[in-house]
Length: 86
Image 1: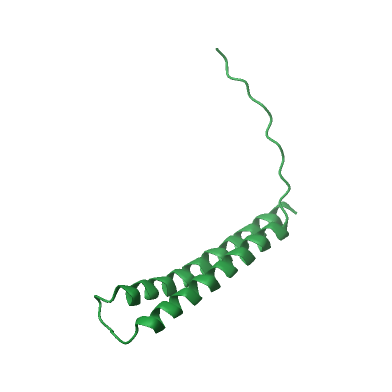
Image 2: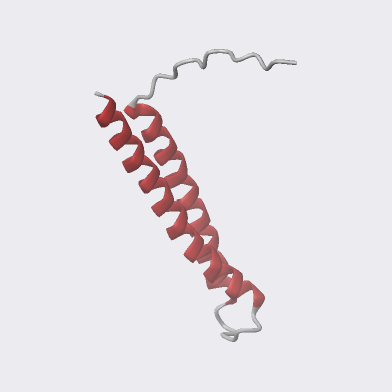
């Protein structure tokens, strides 16, 4: 039994699609940052490592920076790939 190969469709890549991903990830990062700040402010009075709310809030703060960085890198790589094709 032979496998059939079908030609792959060509997908047009534009700079706009990279900007859309970056905009969405930036909005998500701001939302995660807001949740982290709220959690930290609500539970800052008991500043210990056993305070779960504070630790989760700090985790959200760190995650927001990571989400923003990944979104920016996706846009840079995407734009570079588009520039190479032109």
